[in-house]
Structure formats: structure tokens, C-alpha cells
Image 1 (cartoon, rainbow, N blue to C red):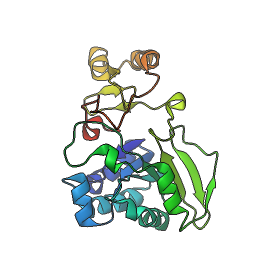
Image 2: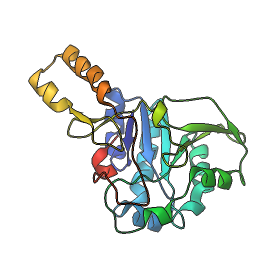
Image 3: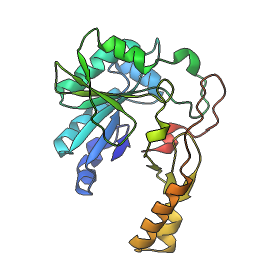
Image 4: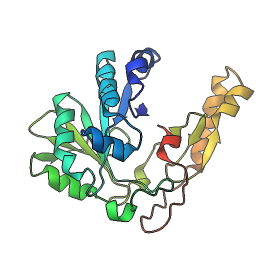
Length: 236
């Protein structure tokens, strides 16, 4: 599974599909070009929308939208984002903002918008049915009766999921992060360069890395972040 901001998918969607990527998550926090640029600081909505189209044309098994909702920034777009995903036959997950990296454009505690608030907003427009479906990740899923779309809620603050989390992330430098909210990691690039072509050695290191996977994050919106790595340095 690959998580991306979607900006390079018009060029790379086909190559990623051919390389064996089956599932792809695309970040989309707003459908308003001005608001999108303000939230992302550098993003261009047209490029991301073109990336979503390219991903659908490439034929990935599953394409999902990820949206981070902030109070008084884009919380009014929750129904529209679900409608956008539903119209394209995609699922969508709403993610509570995580305190990664130092920022200066908003106060995270003030901008916090919980999954329960998002769910309440959606229930004014749609009928949500809880489901036991899972992708092995932290999302709690609901089926939208009026569409064939699932909506997921990833709630590190309001509904902590650390006890059941099985996710790890590979950065572009080959670093395997074992928790989004901690710095425990393994340098897979070094392993591959030291043992080129040795898949058994790589598997051995991957299995051993699970022994140092932390029990959970230590996110606290009321204090300065303990992780100075931003999401664009983390990858998916």
C-alpha cells in the first residue's frame, strides 16, 4: 500500500501499478483551490485531482481518500469530501491531526476536530452503519447506506488505537519507522546494501524489527510536539 499527496500520479500511476502496488491512499483535505493551498502551503488542487483520475485509470485494486479535518478551516467540507469519494466509487478516511513537527500557522489544540464531531456532521446528511470490516489498520469503518462507500475514522486522540496497530512505514531513505509517533526505526537501506539480493536477510531483519515496535504514541495537543519530523518527511 502506498500513501501519497497525489501530485505525481499523472506521471507515475501506471509505473506504480506495473511495479506491483495494489492499494493507494491519496491525501485530499479540501475541494476548494484557495483553501487547499492554504492548508497544504504549496499544493495545487488541480494536480491532485488529475492524480486521482490517473490512479483510477491505472486500475489499482483499491483507492482511498485521506482527509485531515481542522476546526474553522475545512470542517464545513466533510459532506462534500464524502460525496466526492462516493461519486468515484472510493472509500474515505478522516484523520485527527497528529502533532508531528513544529508548525506556526495554527494552534493544534484550538484546531482539533474530533472523529465524533465529523461523524455527527455526516449523520446530518447520510445514514452510517457501523461495520466490523477492517483493512488491518487503525480505521473504524462505517457503511454509508445511501452509497456503496465506506467512511473510516482514524482517531489517535479521541479513540486511541495503539493496542491493535500493526502498521509500519518505509521512508524514502529506506528507514522503517515502527510507530508514527515515535522514532524507533531500522535502516533497511543499509541492510540491502550490505546484503544485496539477500531476501532472507531482509525478511529476518523485518521480523526482528517487530520486537522494538513501541506500545504506542505519546501525542499531546497541549504541549510542544516530541516528534520534530513532519509528515512529508515520514511518507507512507
